[in-house]
Image (cartoon, rainbow, N blue to C red):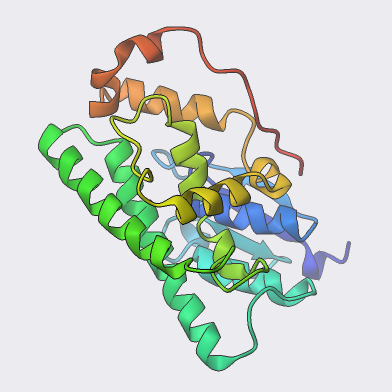
Length: 239
């Protein structure tokens, strides 16, 4: 490969925003290399490259660095036809707004998962249920966010359903129980091969260990689950 166009993704293993990028890379069969870092011990070379000192970043060749998952996935979509992003200016703007919506869902979902305080945990659960309703409304009479075909906006929501599916056995309630369309949508997204290959091999184990080691509300509510036999491995990192 021409070094000018070599793609190197820098990621954190359980980062949901990195999962977005990995999922679209796998879907588009883009050749890439990957470097994992620990967010509690960021290497100097990473701090020099990442303007906001966070992942993901995509290094293109030896000079260009893209940062922020939305910018990276749009770039990947542009260079790997057929494009999944609409050419219509209005639809493109609506999709980008939903990119941001997905980021808020993911941020609050991860805060909920790793929450240490019962009161905050309940508030986050209520916030999520309320905002899942909006997603369910968007899916009225549609299989995907923009209709019958996958579009780029759908890939932004993959991490949400990967996490909810993983935690199904330990969540205090089914947060999607009133949202049938959203359940079907989530099943559709997580059944894609790229939703599986876009995760590191030990994603579930790393998440569960984090929930346990931080003594979160989720862990305290169901310690037997975390201390018993671990679920079987179910994903593979194919790139």
